[in-house]
Length: 120
Image 1 (cartoon, rainbow, N blue to C red):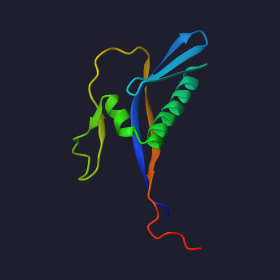
Image 2: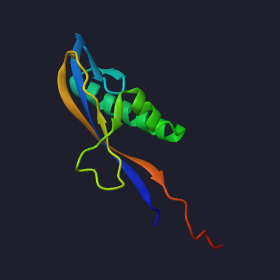
Image 3: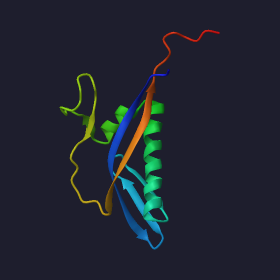
Image 4: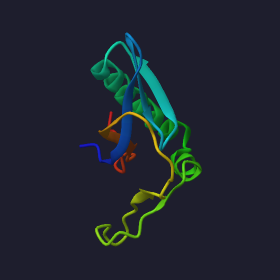
């Protein structure tokens, strides 16, 4: 059995019509923007782009730095158990146009190296 740690991610996103057949979707918290031919297409593209953003940060070992640069900070929520780390978004002012929707994803973040080693 491989032991893994997965990251549960919930972000606010927005979608709006940009032109007759062009919809823009954005996740301003991490600066990801994409487009599609319909509202649902733009949302699907944004979901994929956010997954790729997190995957890329994990692969390069820069996730914590990228989140801090996006104005996230470790959470002090009472729901965070002893020894666990939760990140929360600092308040951001300003209006963002478009209909709000949520992005939910679970990203496999880390995998444990086998302690016993393989026997040949």
